[in-house]
Length: 361
Ligand SMILES: *Cc1c(COP(=O)(O)O)cnc(C)c1O
Image (cartoon, rainbow, N blue to C red; front, side, top):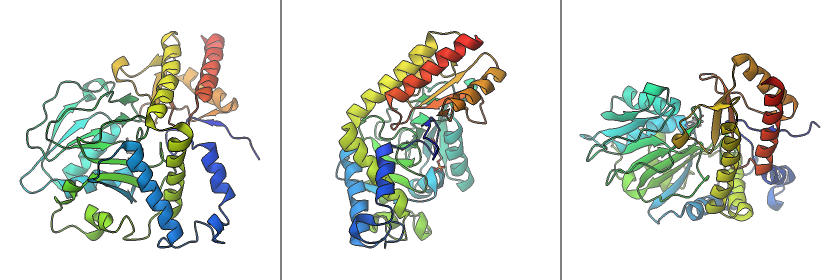
């Protein structure tokens, strides 16, 4: 067996080793059932325990008030780009969007396709999405304000969330959910594909406030209604059982091994601080995001030439440091420092970067 590498992939991404080991250990005989989790009924008590435990852990970790529902849906964050405007923009109303990069652009494209009223109230496109906009006016009475909390590809992140008064916030938190605590009360809906910080691909978490469920228009197909999934505890149709089970184990790891979101944030701040701190001390590596907009999750950087970037990624791979290539649309390099990446992993990356700079600078 090849030894595991340090995996800086942007998503699907590294998972805690203890989670993978537990999955392996109980894969053939799930908790005394004599069957694999892949073989049991989604309506069995065994699976419902897994599902409900996952929901309760999300509620505890995010300190969700009682009027929030936690759903596990399919179709990825990309399907939420369309379900949100379908369900949450009532007749005569319009939604606000902030454009901070590739994923926000895709969310805006879907509301355009639906032909639903919306307004892009701010964008950082003028400087290739290197920053988080600061000056914008939320439209009074807007259906919601949609923003992407962490921009996986451009390496920017909202340090504090936009203030929208009575307008509910709707956020794509795919790449930074559970990385830090925040106040959920201003949010009408939070969503995240699991494959960055939560688990494997195949399930999307949707956290929705009950008053948002009441907005649903009359003519939506069953699977595209949030109420369908809320009323059936995400069991209207067969859910992705294995993905939910792995998310449950990751949630348990964050809660019990790490000690919750305050502890998680402290570790994430330390990791990002080490890497940015090192980069800023050199002329060889240059961060691409504005300093006040930098992401703790996805550190994007350039080397002096594209040839050196190729060499950097290839040599890192030889040293068992994988996944450092930037997104194909932007080039450069990117280290994704999701929850499962340890401080030691970041230190090993920095040691390699020092060595590479000394040899090639
Ligand atoms: C990865 C990612 C997506 C896409 O998620 P899918 O589950 O593949 O649809 C959307 N938004 C953000 C912020 C992401 O990082």
